[in-house]
Length: 300
Ligand SMILES: C[C@](O)(CO)[C@H](O)COP(=O)(O)OP(=O)(O)OC[C@H]1O[C@@H](n2ccc(N)nc2=O)[C@H](O)[C@@H]1O
Ligand SMILES: Nc1ncnc2c1ncn2[C@@H]1O[C@H](COP(=O)(O)OP(=O)(O)OP(=O)(O)O)[C@@H](O)[C@H]1O
Image 1 (cartoon, rainbow, N blue to C red):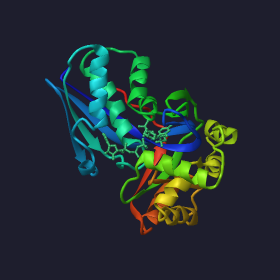
Image 2 (cartoon, rainbow, N blue to C red):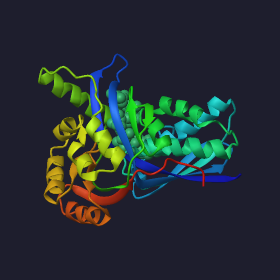
Image 3 (cartoon, rainbow, N blue to C red):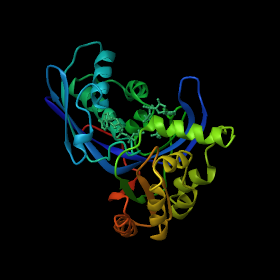
């Protein structure tokens, strides 16, 4: 095989419960991941060495050196296989960069699947999941797709079958937010309030809404412990959240570490109307619609 193409979805965290800071610098989480139909494409072409190029709307914000998570993923896979394999990776970027939608993690997952195929390694999914966990806390879910509950630092996954399709509108804000900075702000806000970080808990009503495909119930339970920190760092996000509420969203929240905000709609047409309304909000760079859950990357 001389070329392999995969497409990899973005995620929204429908519940993100953040526990205390651990000694290793991470936080224990209950992280309910949901993969949505905004896709990066990762192509792995035969090559002597591992290289990357990026095309698409967000390309200028993505590193094309060893800082690229897809390059790190290909190197980690080659190391696991014990040979100096090469691949010329081409990423077509549609997932907003540093937006809280795990775009870099998606590209890493895409590179693992594409290179496993290109190099004819035939490694089982479990091996890819293990390599993924070393690359970043969001990378295992980016491999899995669908809807899943993540514990530990978010890398230990348990799949959650859902009872239907959920429709979403996303407001992409200008500029990104650094994930470590948002976690640090969350700790600082808790310390300033004298609040002990609670042990993270799954919201059983939210999980039931996902299982039964009950969008109004899910909308009412959306929750993100990082949201106050994202709002402290980017106060203008409060205006975007209010715009989504005023436009009749079933619920809205900051996605992961932000600054993208996600709004749940009743159906596809409602999602389009929400996106139209959100795009009028001054801090919204662009508004997108998507549905979930969708599958993780599989070779075409
Ligand atoms: C905010 C989320 O996107 C929600 O899914 C993730 O928790 C972040 O996952 P990620 O971007 O893959 O993050 P990683 O690359 O693993 O870690 C980056 C940094 O985020 C912070 N971090 C991340 C995950 C976690 N459970 N606790 C943390 O405190 C740490 O400062 C860490 O050094
Ligand atoms: N393939 C990649 N795509 C996007 N960003 C990348 C990639 N590789 C490395 N990066 C770097 O990672 C940073 C975070 O990018 P990413 O789009 O993954 O953020 P995010 O969506 O906020 O992540 P998460 O939701 O997992 O916290 C970017 O600012 C960029 O410098």
